[in-house]
Amino acid sequence: MDIFSSALIPFLVLIILIYGYIKNIDIYNSFIEGAKEGLKTSLKIMPYLIAILVSIGIFKSSQAMDMIIYIFNPVMKLIGFPEEVFPLLLLRPISGSGALAAVKSIIEDYGPDSYQGRVASIMVGSSETIFYTMAIYFGSIGIKDHRHTLKAALISYIASIFATIFICNIFF
Image (cartoon, rainbow, N blue to C red; front, side, top):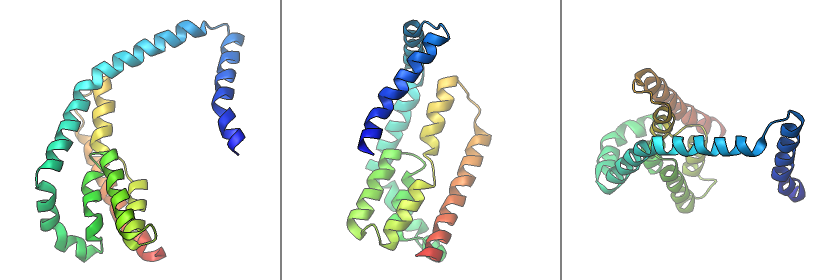
């Protein structure tokens, strides 16, 4: 299996080069044009990235998360959501790396086979970093009006939370 995975990328590059040669495509110039376009896109989305990263930093350094956890703790207990996983619930729509750090902390503290570890693992695997993804994709193509996307994404995120609790309660 290691040989297969090590050879996969060079094999795919070779296939692309052969296909380009057969179709008489100037591969080098196509690559350069693609790189230019990627750089333009990177520069276009930079303000959105900076905004989301600064917002995450402010959220983490303030005591807002602790206050939100304190306020919503009775509701979370009522639906059977573990208090220890609540920071992940708040971080996942905002930051993928923050969510992974939260999962790592939960697994280190409670173990991967604990209820908290399983809830965290299923939750991070069944949800998306909504605000980060919207900032990147919508920022790169200049969409300003995203209200319907945000509503649909938040509804699906809430559904994933309930599905996570439901699945964990059935199987674990």
